[in-house]
Image 1: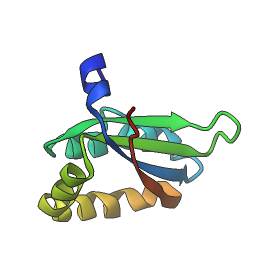
Image 2: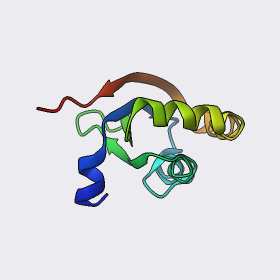
Image 3: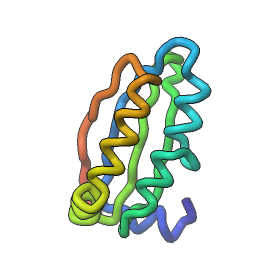
Length: 110
């Protein structure tokens, strides 16, 4: 994510995952910044970028950060790509033991 795009984000969706043992590499490929999830999100206007992060204390825990210009952009994406989103989510269920949305956050400026 370049500096200009990084500065433009105003909304982030944070997810926590625990891949199934042995599925970590495949999980990283699917959820990483060039993976299938990022490719789907990039289709939405206002998507800034996706970051996959590994917990250094608990190596089996990952957190994704999906950056958007605004909540409205994210909501429009979810409506426009609901079918594709659900299909990819079902496909990826086989890779994870646990998945939960931690939250949706607005960037404070000032």
